[in-house]
Length: 132
Image (tube, rainbow, N blue to C red):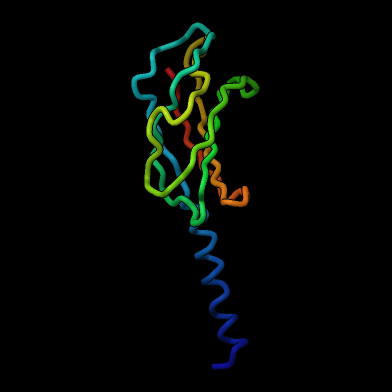
């Protein structure tokens, strides 16, 4: 088989594998023992634990950021943690401003951004949950 035909056959397979692996990065979390807060005055609290799947090869750090989807400009913050492999980031790895909606239930999004040793963004994943 000539090289042009072989490349034509293999390139779509390689591209599909590359995009599938990028789409595999996902996170999950639970609020855990977070004290209920509905006053609109959040506290600084330890982060929840995160479940990880499909972390991109070469990841050395993951930046976590929380956003209240009803009030996206509120600075809940997050934290950057070293990643040494595995499928979890332990609860309390960083602190952030807790969810604390003043008027009922809000949905919050945790976004995780994976970085390599050079600081290049490799991929992002997110998970959403209502609170309280």
